[in-house]
Structures are given as structure tokens and as C-alpha cells.
Amino acid sequence: MFYEFNRVLPLLLSPEADVLLKKEIKDRGLIQVNSEIGAKRIIAEFRKRFDAVSLDFWKWYEQLSEKGQRAALFYCILKCYRLIFDFHVNLTMRRWNSTDHSLSKNDVMMEYYQIASQDQFVDSWSEKTRGKITSAYLTILRQAGILDANGQLQPLLLDPQDYRYYIINGEDWYLDACLLLPYEKENIIKALS
Image 1 (cartoon, one colour):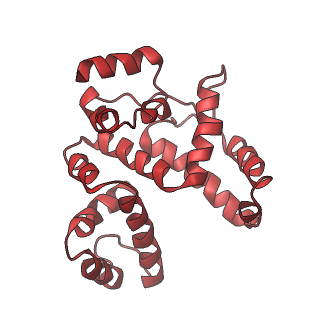
Image 2 (tube, one colour):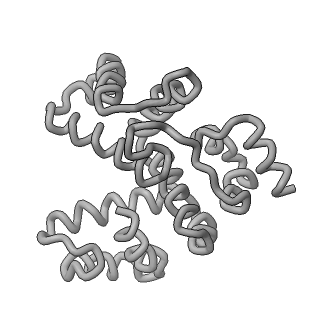
């Protein structure tokens, strides 16, 4: 929900965020969903993502290109949702570092079952929820630019300036999450020096 999030971001940044978000849930002018319950759920998720990083991040975010913003939202999602982080580190990054650069829903489901075997709460989710989560993860990767339409992984290549926040704030692990090769990371760091 990249575009919806960007429309709601000014409300989240406002000193009157709580009042404005309650109004948005009632009126649904920015997120355009049919029900108030759906709007409440979406706003709650947006708030989690917003709160996962500092206010400085959002000031920087506003200056980025669309591609940089998509990458930045992916970073927020990784910071916010442990299961998505685990999928990414344990499955996607591992796949990228192997000879098989494809990723399918079945691959994500297999990783889900691996995590569920060690986490009773995750294991308790219904089959429908499991399917939604795995589909959502693949959608997130596609929207971030890490998974193409053919199910092939690709590095998230941005302008070096679009990586500045991560490097300056000691979050250079994110360059690995973007599937960058060591020499690409080194070139970005040099360009920002």
C-alpha cells in the first residue's frame, strides 16, 4: 500500500496525528476502503511502520525518489515485522547467495512451516492466514523491486544518496537485505564518503 501510506504520512507526521487519523478512519478519504473496520486496521499497520523508525527517517524519506521511498518502506517493514525479517534473512537472502535466484509462494510456505515448528503462536495460525502472509511477503518484495514478475530475485540498486540514512545510522545490514554484492556496497560507501 505504497501510495496509500504516502497519502497518510502527513497525518502521521502532524502534531495532531491522533485526531487526524481518527477522522481518516471515519471519512476514509485517503485510504479509500469501504469499511471503518478495514480503515482502522490499515491505519494501525501504518502507525506500526511509522513508529518502527525515528522521525529523522521520515524527514529523509520525504526527499527520496519513488524507488528510494519504496526501498525505505521495505526497510520499515523489516524493522517492524519479525516474521517478514525472518523470511527475508533465512529464505530470500540465502536464496540470493545460492545458485537458485527464484522465489515462489511454495518456497515461502516451506520457510513458514520451518518457523512454525519452533514457534507455537505462529503454528496456531489458520491455513488462510498462512496463505495471506506468504502472498503478502511476495507482494512486498515485488513492490520494493527485489522480486520481478517472473519470480526471480534481483538486487535493489538505488542512487548512493538513497542509502545514506542506513549507512550513517549504522544500519548498513540493510544493504545486504537489498541483495547487494560486496563490491556494490563498497562502491556506495565510497560514493558517500
